Length: 514
Image 1: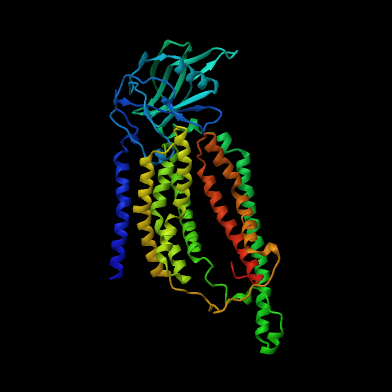
Image 2: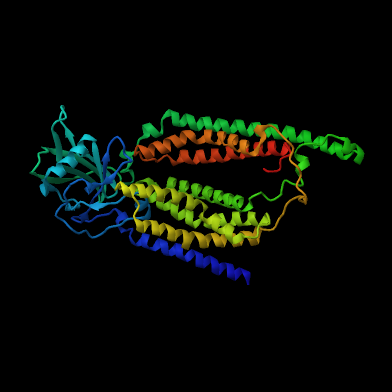
């Protein structure tokens, strides 16, 4: 009767995840990127902000720009990833149709009073730029410019769009800003646009190539960092193998020799090292609930990282707005049983009895830290009216995913882990009385070893983290996920080697708190 119960529980947990995907699929028509002649093409206005601080962004219409005459569109979509990244698109009101040229046309008029002029002057002084989208292709433009003396300020009023198409798909978009008009209070400024369609030989699969920066991501320094990390792996694996094989062989030889002695000679001998703690090494940790939750969360994060990188290498997720974050959220929710399985089984093997509490902590440990930090920063963004502010409805949606998708799937994994691998299977008996830990040097304390042990793994990935964060802060599109996969493999190998060495040092110092 237990197996049907587990199947029913798993089906009930997967149902919310399936329902979560339905609205995303229903709103995915715009992602087909195919158009018929004279079909509607939407120009989305996204953000505006200072060029020298690209993370400071506000809504495009926070500046007193005017909207075109067209009021409605036939489709609109926003994924969860877009909402979490602050990609809030607003319709420009410009009437654009596929393969239909538009001559220079005035679409609105700005009544430039003193307040509006001051807003534009502030934007021009701070070199404000804006971002738009057509068919997911980003377009950037400058708000205006000042004269050499910094006394007069001019606004670009004419958006000249040149759109390239290949068959029934858009493959290229270029914007030229013209129509420089001096900002004079109490005047009217006419905003205009034009659209020129041209046939292009660029393939649809290659339309994002012009936004990539191979000279930055495939620089010699990047290749050298990969090679350097790879050499570190070879050195560590060789060092660990040599030290452990020689040391353990010597220890085994000494201990096997001692087995031939009688009890009196063995008692008078100088036994020391890792053999002395064999009866305590599998003792439950001092905080088994937190320890097992951390292990389960770590296994889930590794699974999510591996799957997302593989999907990004295959599908080129950088070509769709918010698709990387949406994929990461979906994969994290889907891999919640991994967290429950490894965390629940480890907690059961350590004799833990409050497994429901452990399940809740394991399920919400990472989401609570990430969402807590993000929501705190979000309130600051809301206060400053930044475009990256996450809407309240999106925050509610994230909380619903945690409670109705992640928690049930984590429950399934916890039940499976406790039933399938929750029984203690230690190779030796655990002593009833804990063995006293002898005094040792300060650098052999577990807290110090934890800090020192993290230096080499960090050293193997910090160059790649530089490229990742630079692409984030500098608005470069990160696309070299093959490098990221190599770095992930290197990180795993380095972490394993460092863990083996640190564990051996602790056990050899007769400290079983590994």
